Structure formats: structure tokens, C-alpha cells
Image 1: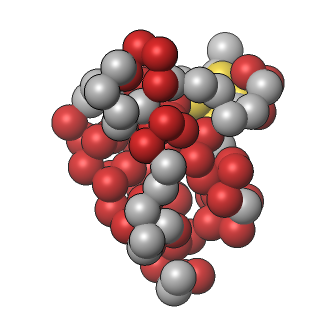
Image 2: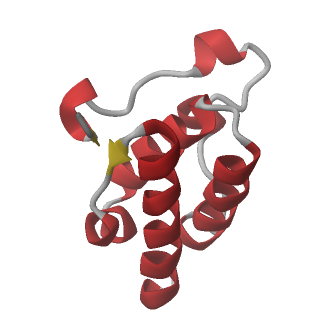
Length: 96
């Protein structure tokens, strides 16, 4: 994983999440911690927004070049059952 590329993609994803749904993330931590990155990807994809999906795909390709477990991001056949939070709800902040 290219660290600077991961941080750059995390920053772009952070801006989109903040503008579109009011979520605040830590871009440095997102680029370093796989669990946190998975949770951010789950939140981004749960919105079903084309821009968020595109940047989530790019970020995932850099962070998880071998792929990510489909159950974490909801990519399985039964998406409703497959989406499981990877962290507590307080893991990501929300703007007031």
C-alpha cells in the first residue's frame, strides 16, 4: 500500500462523507488502521451514492489490494444480512 496515496484517497473520501452525510473521519487513522478503514467503507457504501461508491472503491483498492471480506462491506448475496458494523456506532463522528 502506498501510504501517501492511501492518505490522499482517505482525505477525498473524508470530504465527501462530511459534505454528503455529515460524517467526520480521521484520514491518517483511516490510512493506517484496517478495521477503521473497513468501517468507513461500510458507512460510505451504505449511502448508495455514486460518488461515495467510486471513491470507496478507489480507497479499498489501495488499502486492500487482495480484496476485502464481502461480509464486512455488504457485498454478499443477502446484503441486508451481510452488513454488520465492524465497530461501535461512536467510532465515526457526526457533525451537529
